[in-house]
Length: 312
Image (cartoon, rainbow, N blue to C red; front, side):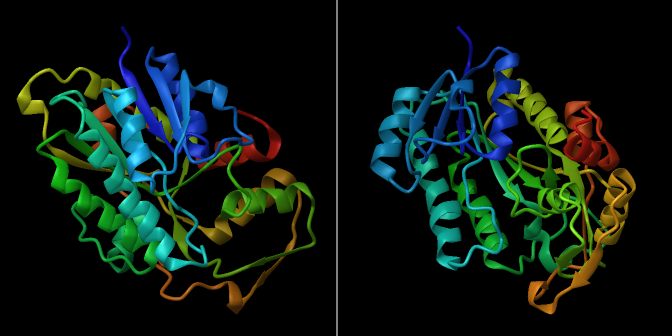
């Protein structure tokens, strides 16, 4: 019987790539999301449940009925500019605790591993140069603070199952929502916009291809599937999922211009500049590469060509 993997946030962007990749490896994938209907194909899952993770009672009933071996928790509020700060804590912290409380209702040792999607923004003001997992977190906004709080809350559950915290740096690909930076820019270049209004284009960010993120995730899940003794269980691991190199937003714009032949005017607007914005944020991915024996497969240029020109 194939092992059962529960994927929360199943109608989201990352899940749309993770679910088929996990199924390809032979897992029985059960999706969970608060959306009953969505533009993504929920038929990709072997089973699908519509549940709000803030509905603790219903969530517990569903999780017990699923009885997963491995959990990939991708559900969360990830748009940093979301207007209601309290929502970050309701969804990212309390929603995660509801899920973990539901999982401990299962028989002991039923759940081998829980993967939690966190964010590189937790490093915040300490994001100087190349950041590794030992860098002290110092988040600077509600989104980042909620993700760090989620990580800390999860540590209360390590007597029940192992936890892997995935600190995701910026990642992108075909199908990502257009309110995120790169899809928004790609849309402008495809429509040959004369002017693009942006905030600070002199900051450096780490951009990774969603297919590389999923490649690492699948390898980590495969390893968790093989855990058989107690020494491999009841631990917390943290991984940076990143490209390992910084790219200035100006450089990103130059690459899109080169690929498309379009050279719009870039207007930097103060209204679009974030307060306390981190100047440089890029991650050391050596730990996840060493753990999975999987290196990056896609450069930023290849990712942009895929999104802009359909070249995969």
